[in-house]
Image (cartoon, rainbow, N blue to C red; front, side, top):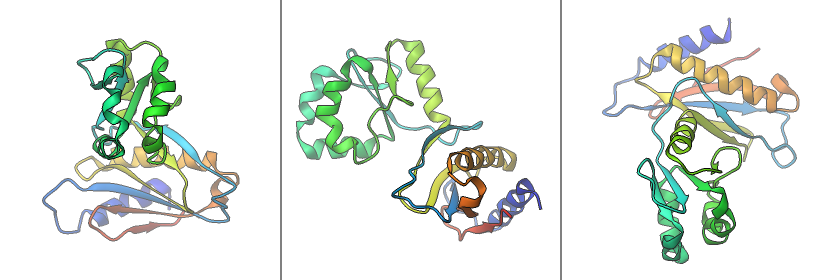
Amino acid sequence: MELNEQLETALNELRKNPERKFDQSVDLIINLQKFDVKKNQVNLFISVPHKIKEKKICAFLEVKNNNVETITKAEFKKYSDKKELKKLAKKYDFFIAQASLMPIIATTFGRVLGPAGKMPSPQLGILMNADDKAINELKNKINNSVKIKTKEASIKISIGKQSMKNEELIENIITVYNSVMKALLKGKDNIKNIELKFTMTKPQKIKIR
């Protein structure tokens, strides 16, 4: 059975579960095998065709910008307190920054944002020019991307919402699956199986061979 068909079947099965009062996340789990997490790190930003959710983005900029919640250089002092820093890291999904401020951002925010995996990164988060166009383009790119970093032999990510159409979810899943497969040393041989679930359901297993 083709992967697309299996995904379609799995999604239809998941939709038979009792309705919840909220729009559940659709989670993709890629279980790895013959994979040494310590030796082989997978660290990816993947652009997906359909927006998963509106992410909460915060920007470190020289001057305030109306398109994004901003923390200016003058306000950095406020975050010398670790409690404030932790609150900030919890409040936002993603941080972007003006390139010129990166050294001071690293010193001020690095100790909390670093371990949380939320430091602005060259892959997706550093702005050379902090003008409206650049900020809006970056925001769109972030909202249409997923970040994958292997910490264990299983990759779990939210791939969309229950309210999305099956075909949109499947396109997102296939995009992520193919990117992960390319990043793995042994490709498909490193993948044991994949699972699909909604926030409140048991997973549906999908065989890939």
